[in-house]
Length: 482
Image (cartoon, rainbow, N blue to C red; front, top):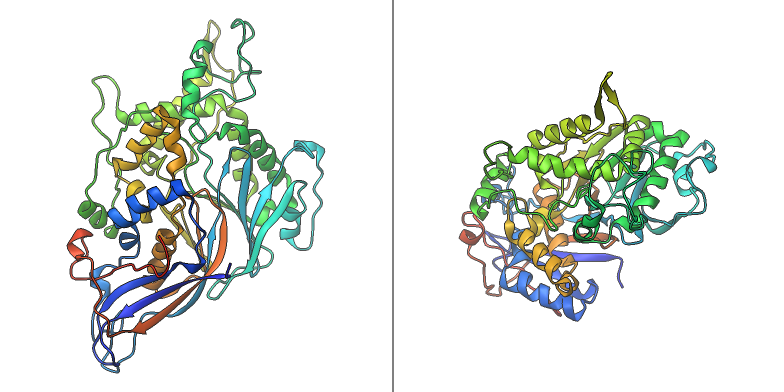
């Protein structure tokens, strides 16, 4: 398989005069072959719902003629869209025994894997290295899945490391290694965590572990403890790119539906897209969702203590929201979760309040990160079914929870995300050399080649009104297969 994906912007006309952007074409010969189940989803979302066209759309106000920022043609007949290459990274997931993560240092980008068990926590004594990246690559159990050079305008430094953690989907369900107890004696913070849940409910709560993430939580706890102890931690930028929590599976949908038009308007105005449904008489919706998150922290307090340790040890930290935890884009949800966690760690006694459990932190979220020529986001903005404010994805998750075979029908749909990343790179004048996302749960590290071509063919255009982008005409064509 080739080392690059190929993307072409197709312009109307046969010469170098005039010209309107007609099509963003994806050459699919280098895309991975889909399974039969993936083809079903591809047909539904990419053909029926035009997902890839939506992902590759550019705002109409960015497509103007005779402008120094034109994305079509100037009076000198020069296409102003950038052409060239950028590096595309999908960090994969940390789920179901598959533990991937991203590393960036100097001019190198790595997608790595981690297999735990060789050392546990303090048994491994990390040694300082002249090159900080060597400390990460030297962690027992770490292996390189792929490695490539980052393209300009990346301006990273060799003595700084970017550690990127993918989707985790930690559920409010008991740790997977807990056997069903015969009675409740001995329950307490030392052994089980600071939560008071009837053990007979454990089976029902396990439905929230939709992605089988609990099997990888011990490995993550171990990995984070090792990272926090590395001498290189002080020069590390720590990023978790969303879907840290599983807040959809076996949960009611607590956000309102947002239309495509309102979604685009809010996105362009940088407004909050998530809007909570009204709460009950005695509790707000932010408190309800905050309670879900607080329960997750209580049940997996060792994991979240490890996160706090990494935050304390590293140079800087960024936490993004994904689609399954998009509620965290609202400060009131973050604040409610932290308040409930603090309350649960305090026990009232006859001698006064006493903290019986170490509190952990829920961190404020942001949509994306642009730093040092790297653009990092969760990636759901290119997934029409799962974009913020769309209940379609939540509904699909609930169907799969109640009928598990549906879970096998999910697909990576790489075409949609490469098209979206290319549109974003283009719209930002190629100001990043590395694009990073998660969301798909499938690791990838490839270059994307962006070219501009002229054609006298008559393209079938997608009406811009379908996507709320004025008069812009964009159609995605596949050359070889679905």
